[in-house]
Length: 212
Ligand code: G3P
Image 1 (spheres, rainbow, N blue to C red):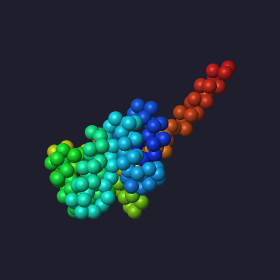
Image 2: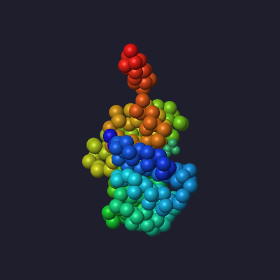
Image 3: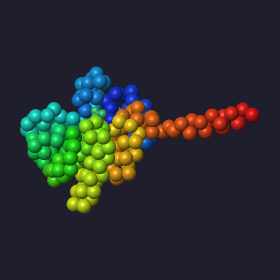
């Protein structure tokens, strides 16, 4: 499973770019607002730090407007993936963009029929939101990811699954076990993934032994 970082904070991306295990970046309007810069500025900065897919989200609206905005982002860099909201207009936009070779990530996916529609339209990625689903029905986020993975394999879709809205290490584990192609993970969770209380304790035991 690939690891993307789910952030628009440049310092976080700079730090994880040195770890060597991050395959891409996803941003959204809330994350861009937290960082401070405009979407174009932030995205351009990210392309210098990570050589992998970078999702930039268009404003929700009519297909023609989302297509125009998508084309602006796609021209910025070869790694740009245009994030399109899961609406009827969004699906129309994905169909046109995929025909033109522009990569898309259909976001705010909460059921399998939305995922299938996005895949049929030619989406490069779909993003089921595990955490937000768990917020309303605890424990169901993982089943959504698992079902989408199964359906894409069953019907031969190339669309990749990005497990999104990841809130904790258990979500990453669940996404991996469900066969998700990618998990997009906040910085805090990425750091937590690398730790375990017994690793910390084991290090202390070794350090004490070395002193003796
Ligand atoms: O990037 C989309 C998604 O990962 C947002 O997560 O925590 O706002 O539900 P969250």
